[in-house]
Image 1 (tube, rainbow, N blue to C red):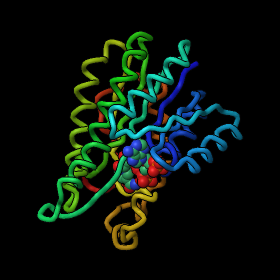
Image 2 (spheres, helix red, strand yellow; image 1 turned 120 degrees about the vertical axis):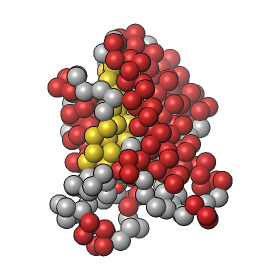
Image 3 (cartoon, rainbow, N blue to C red; image 1 turned 90 degrees about the horizontal axis):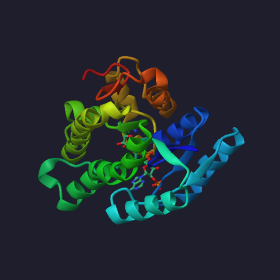
Length: 242
Ligand code: NAP
């Protein structure tokens, strides 16, 4: 069976991606860190729509936790492989640089960038053996243009974009594509604390994006229609200048 692993699939953009990839016919591995209740809701929703899903909790920022969970899953699914990986889990810990603590820098780099390395290296071998794979990394407008108050987050997302481009070149010949999606402001728990009324005045389409709109783009990138797109960063931001 072909699986799609979505990190941070319990809420927000990741949840919408889980529902969308299930509709594309993949069995979904819903990863989350601590919110089991929300992850179970996603699983139920997928099953209610006729799809398959399993929970696969691990902390993407912890290499040992990633290795144990994925190795254990692989040992119990010898006939299956993860054909699609969406590196979506992420956090923000915003503050201006002069006040930024080591912990804030390190947490954001670990969760948003090092996680890409920890998770992707564990699923790549299967994709290379099967000579097919789709990897989509959820970056951000912040990683393209930089945002004041987010030096840690902008650095992590810019790093993720560089890694996307390098890996695409390494494995293009194996029919594995690697792309990044760079959302602007999307209405989720992550952006709940932002002044939406003020910010949307800067957005040409005049509103925050929806998680489902990002998921639709990911659905396209994992489809056969996108076989010739790799190493790209695709913005989805309502026209915010990048
Ligand atoms: P969200 O609503 O805060 O959800 C975050 C998800 O990531 C949750 O499922 C959470 O799991 C999971 N997660 C966080 N840390 C984790 C860890 N260490 N290990 C495993 N899972 C972890 O965030 P979102 O807005 O959907 O954002 C999703 C992605 O889009 C992130 O990479 C974010 O940087 C990016 N993005 C978002 C926006 C936006 O405007 N929302 C814009 C640009 C980019 P639990 O439920 O267990 O906590």
